[in-house]
Length: 388
Image (cartoon, rainbow, N blue to C red):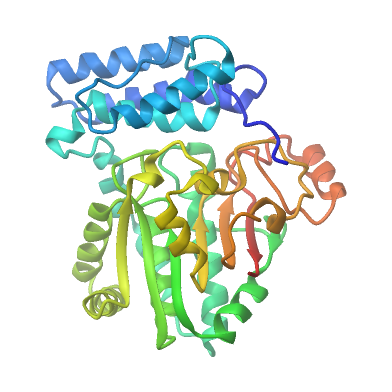
C-alpha cells in the first residue's frame, strides 16, 4: 500500500518551496537567458511565473494543443483529489511540477518553433571543463570489465548531482566522501549483468550534460558484452531544465567528436553501435507526463518487463518509479517496485523526500541530526538494485 502522494501545500515544505520560489526563479532565469524572445512570449512566461508563485488556479492547456485531453484528464483527477479547484499550491507535487514544465513549453510556443527554452544553460554546461575532465576519468583503463563497470556506475550516479534546475545539488560536484553513498548494491548489479551477458538493457535517462556523458560512457561499457543491446529512454520535449532529449544526445556526440582523443573514440564506438542497431535513443511522451511508472502504457510496460535490466536515473525518475510519497524509509526497494518484473537498478542523488531501502532506521536518525536537509540537498546517493 503506497502512502498518499506529496502535495504542494504547506504539508511538505520542499514541494511548497519548489512551487513558490524555485520554479518561478527558473522561469525568470529562462526569460533572462532568452532575451530575444518575442514580446508575446515574454508576457506569457511572466504571467506563468507570477501564477505559479502566487498559487493561482491551474489552467487547462488550450484545446488546440495535441495533448490537451491527456493533461485535462490529469487536471480533472487533481480536482477530485483536492475536492476543489486545483491550484499550483494545493495539487499533488509530481503533477504540478511536470505540468508546470509543460506550460513553459506552451508559453514559449515550443510546439511551433522547436526552440529549447533551456538551451542556453545546456550549452554552457556542455562547454564546461568539469564535464570533459569527467569524461577523461571515465575513459581511464581498468583491469577488468567488472572494475570498469563499478567505476562507471559511481561516476554516472554522482554526475546526477549536476542538475541545472537545482543549484543546491550542483554545488557538491562529483567529488564524494565515504558517507555520501547510503545504499550500495553495485556488486549485485554487476554480477547480474555479467552473469548472463545478453538481452536488452533499458536506461531511463535524466539530465543532459555531465550526466548524459556518463550515461553514454556506461552504455559503452555495457556494449562490450556482445549479446547486449541498450535502449536509452529520453524525454520527448525539454523539461526540468536539463533533462535529456534526442537533440541533447546529438549535440553531445558531436561535441565528443570535436574534442578528439578518448572522447572522439567513445563517440565513434557509440555511433557504430547505433548504426548496428545495438544502441537506440527512444523519446517517449510518457517520460514528460505526470504518470507514475506503474501507469505506463501497456506497450512500454511489456517492453520493460522483458528487459535484461532497467536502469532508472535520477531523482524525478525515482519519484516516478517508487511513488512521490513519504515511505517508511526501510520499506524495501523491491517492495516499492513490485509492479515491475524486470531486474531494476536505480542511480539517484537525493533531491526530494521520497526514499525507500535504507538499511536501518538509525541511519535516518543520524542523518537528520547531522544534516536536516539530507533528503533534498543532493549530497547523498543511492545505488539500489532488485533482481527479477
